Image 1: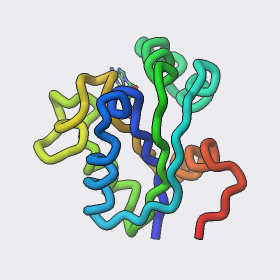
Image 2 (image 1 turned 45 degrees about the horizontal axis):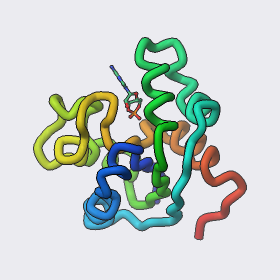
Image 3 (image 1 turned 45 degrees about the vertical axis):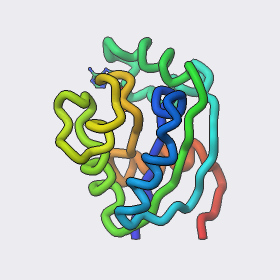
Amino acid sequence: MERTLLIIKPDAVAKRTTGKILHRVTREGYRLCALKPERLTPETAGQFYQVHREKPFYKNLIEFMASGPILVAVLEKDNAIRDLRRLIGATNPKDAHEGTIRKEFAEDGSKNAVHASDSPQTAREEIAFFFPATHFS
Ligand code: CMP
């Protein structure tokens, strides 16, 4: 069993599609280990995305992620990290395959509805970022 982090971003929360997105995920066999609403500040959004701090889209990304509430989930199943990345689809919905979450719910490559951890190391760090010292059962 493997765990990964899913963020439902401000655009999807504002459009009230969180229920549909969580349904898509749990339908694929993920167990919901933890779920909480959050509101990032520019500082906490900057910490979370510090790997992108040199990128041209960094400022926009931080502003967007701090622009409204988000929903953060820890999801568990075999190959959770790889499979969730496939299920969410490409960063830009124009490039995302039919049937992926971003194809259905994302507006563009920036307001792209969801984030999912991209490696075991990142998943550990991202889960600890939002759920420090939590023991998942
Ligand atoms: P996410 O999977 O959360 O990881 C980094 C985020 O940066 C990405 O989704 C997008 O929301 C945002 N972003 C904006 N522009 C780009 C871009 N050109 N390439 C990659 N990510 C981008």
